[in-house]
Image (cartoon, rainbow, N blue to C red):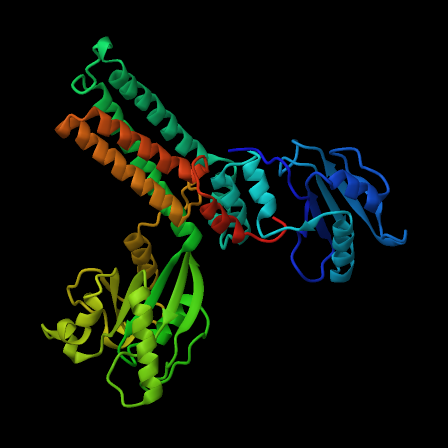
Amino acid sequence: MPHLQTQDTITAIATAAGRGGIGIVRVSGPLTKHIAQKILKTVPTPRQVHTTKFYAADGSIIDDGIALYFVAPHSFTGEDVLELQGHGGAIVLDQVLKRTIEGGARLARPGEFSERAFLNDKIDLTQAEAIADLIDASSEQAARAAMRSLQGEFSKKINHLVEQLIHLRTYVEASIDFPEEEIDFLSDGKVQQQVEQIKTQLTDVLAAAQQGVLLKDGITVVIAGKPNAGKSSLLNCLSERDSAIVTEVAGTTRDVLREHIQIDGLPLHILDTAGLRHSEDLVEQEGIRRAWLEISKADLILLVIDSTDNEINNADYFEKNYSDIFALNKPIIIVFNKIDLSGTCNVPLHASLSLSAKTGAGLPELKQAIKKLVGFQPHNENNFLARRRHLDALERAQNYLQQGSIQLTEQRAGELLAEDLRQAQNCLNEITGEFTSDDLLGRIFSSFCIGK
């Protein structure tokens, strides 16, 4: 990536809003040394902690604190950086921030410090994204996976694949450009063997990335079914608190209720919905409409069935009552509830289980079924965090390699194979930022915290 040339000096409060013991103002850019002189009346020795005072323009003292000064390129951003650590009151921090602006800095955009670190080759794009993911991590497993990404575990896997593609492309393109060397790569088997090896390794990285996306984003689970099947009781059971009102009156739930829980580090966004039935009540109709909207967007549907209902043994029960849900072709777990009243339900259906939302019997089995259905593997110390865009890039690279394999073995088209290998490499380079559009960079860094 090109290094930044002329650049504004940026500043921001790097700590969260509100009162706290410590607050940090961060500055980065060519005017950093000048700003340090203005605020501190001295320039701190680089990379040493200085206890100092922060001065206003009139010479009065704003705060007592600590200053850290880093000289380019030995800093997070690759530029001169100043960190002013003072007391965490909003007024004090605002005064220090205004003082840095008076010195010539401008307010940083969200993620601009990390963006500069990326543009100055201090980190690659996956590491930059891992910074935001570490801050946003919702579980210990996600935090550990984000740290592994920040330390470059994901990047190493991608770079290893890229190096292999470069080596293979060099051999193929040299054979095309210098036919007098009489290298028949189309039939010697060497290229095909290397393509297959890269495909296998890419499949492994893709599987690990899918785990990383699950750790980062989790899945949306919608609880659906008829009124009084025990949907709200199941929500309460899963969340371990009385989130939803539970009564004997059918149609109690009118709106969508949301809870966020974890199963072995897998984030679940659970939605309880209105009971599905025909209703003349306008409010309930709206609740049912919203229920269908959420069902259509779900990653997984828990279809709750009242196991005391005598009709469930009828051959056409599910076709008659739930054909619209099955027509969505989404992952579904059929949950036969209320076994505390009916006993274990033995209806032989794929992806079904029995439980009691009232007593909790069968809940561990449900949690295991959810993890298995989405392919989540907890406690994997090799996990790294990934994003949807990474999966997209890996899948496109996989498709190009598959096309290249066909060009080699069936079409005997060396030039087309070379092009597919080049496209696969570009897809992988998108992940680390070696080959990335400015629009994508803007979307990625705009989601970061201000001051990071």
